[in-house]
Length: 299
Ligand SMILES: NC(=O)c1ccc[n+]([C@@H]2O[C@H](COP(=O)([O-])OP(=O)(O)OC[C@H]3O[C@@H](n4cnc5c(N)ncnc54)[C@H](OP(=O)(O)O)[C@@H]3O)[C@@H](O)[C@H]2O)c1
Image (cartoon, rainbow, N blue to C red; front, side):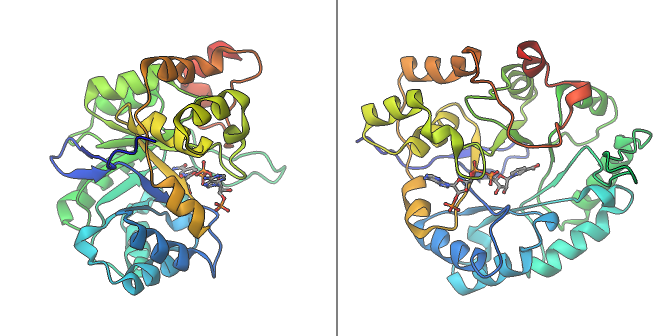
């Protein structure tokens, strides 16, 4: 088994970001703090958080308990959608809960989540996203965050934002894995110098893609677990996977990458073209109506 060091990648602001992040979504209370301690002991130095995960206080306690100095850890949090008119307040709550006076990265999302009385998604289409981004730029200038980025932004949204941004997002965090490779979006971001972060790299809850026979075949070839193939797929292509686990053994095994060869990468990049293999695991379908065109083409 060939297990190279986990690389770091450079952001457009000149800072570096560790090549694998620990995901904390759905990491339950009572477990997430221990998972953070275990991950930091294992060598992880990048933690992906969000106000909406409702566990940032316990993540912050885990960071303190680990004994790893704050400045050695890359911490991301995210503006929650209902705070678009008041980004500073969303940030204030995250900083307080995480027990830190700065973040390495603060990401803004592009949709609102409240529901209508009939249960359908209530999205304020009238909201001008450039107003949110202007607040993110102010937050950056305040020094409370070292970088600002976006989550779930498709190409048409990004093209629109580009008309008014003074600071471009350093990352775009989106669902990304062999069943949803979003080649067009990834290429667009690379061209702009925006680093892509892959969320749900294993397909989310229960890691459904890890049991696919083709992924298992590549894993056997490299003598690693299928999850390592799904994680390495991104790292090998300059994308940062955010992987959630609260299991000490999986935290350990996930923190291992392999060098995939051209044939493996071709298989993984073309995986979603096979009948029944294209799948988006997260809802709502972020950017559905305004982009994710390569997903559209297959639907
Ligand atoms: N910005 C956004 O809109 C957004 C949306 C979704 C996610 N995210 C971020 O991305 C992170 C990762 O995405 P995700 O949590 O949806 O899913 P994921 O990391 O693809 O998968 C997590 C699931 O896989 C299991 N798992 C982990 N390692 C495994 C392994 N080696 N073998 C088998 N199963 C394994 C985990 O269970 P155990 O814990 O029991 O190991 C959990 O059920 C999130 O935690 C969050 O930080 C961001």
